[in-house]
Every structure is written in C-alpha cells, then in structure tokens.
Amino acid sequence: MTGTTRSSGGLDDRRKRLLFRCWHRGTREMDLILGQFADAEIGSLTDAELDELERLIEVNDHDLYAAVSGGGKLPPELEGGLFERIKRYGNWDRDA
Image (tube, rainbow, N blue to C red):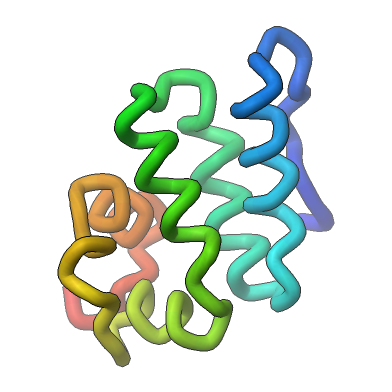
C-alpha cells in the first residue's frame, strides 16, 4: 500500500488534516499503522477521539511505534481508548 485508499471528500477540515497527517508521519511503519486506521475510522471518530488522535500524532514515531507494537509505553494520559483501538485494529501489538 502506498497511501490512503480513502477519499477526503465529505470530511470536515479537521478530519482531512488528521487523515493527511496519519499518512505522512515520517516513517513508513507509522504511516501504515495510523494511515490504515484513519482510512477506516476517521469519519466516525467523536470529537473527543479526534482530540486524542491529535495528541497521539504529536508523539515521535519511534516512541509511538514501540508502544503500538508492545515494546514500549506511552504516558498514561495518552494510553486511552483510541490508542487501544489503533493497536487492535491492525493487530499491531505483538503481546496481545
């Protein structure tokens, strides 16, 4: 996969921006993890979940990848329901 398979048509500006940022992380691994999740879920996320996603995408790729794959931890305030959904979405957490 080389990028988003979802059209941004019909999305509000906030969701369009988040979809783009999820696919343009800096490392291909995190592009795929967050991008695929965003393709599938961005249209249905609540405002609170969008807030959480905005906080998650500020975490550097190395730390976020380690946390998603089960090899590291995020600060407790970032390990909420959306983070758990991202890990489950692609079965990225090798310890699950």
